[in-house]
Image (cartoon, rainbow, N blue to C red; front, side, top):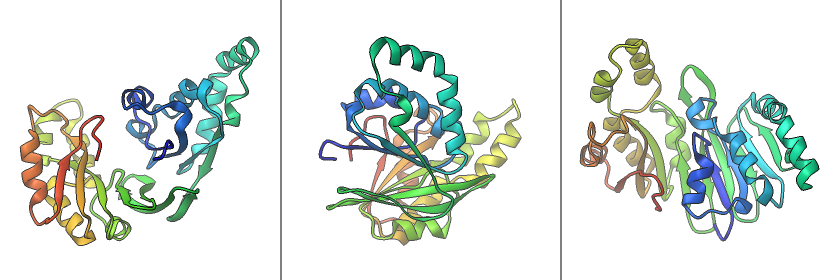
Length: 251
């Protein structure tokens, strides 16, 4: 955004994907974690470690507890490498650039001269707290659902937004994929804590959003669930534009 980057969640490969998208590490302005499942936070430390030589200012990281402890342990785990590079390459301490800010409730969680970020508590049992984020800019508003089952708080946060990026699952396909390997337990979690694609259109319509982007697709394999099926299901009860999220998609 005008040369600045704001990252929502840091799953596996986030630094690589930012590079693929042409986002310079020096552009990093803020990082926001929706909740502490590994597919949303696994590469938080790695993002900063790989961006370290290019960072020019402290970067706030907004996330639920135990963010402060996680950052401290990551820095301790990396201490050998960090100390060698500081001595050998003259780098300043990485800790100077990584500013953790824990949140446990909704409201405005970040503001600068370009954006305001507001959070809302969503329902993603058994993880508590879990958040969705709304990013307001001078010309648009974008809402990221995080992982959540249908809930009024998400609808309220997304009301009137230009874009809603919402996670979705397709339960019939998931039933086949999770057979064996504790599959019944996994399926029970998915059904209790995520949003079916059959429900997401009604959520977007209630919120009055202009564009709905389907994200965090489960199952992610297009051979199992083609884009057309995702679109057909999500369009039911929704009058706006629906897109199926893909890596490096620009909306």
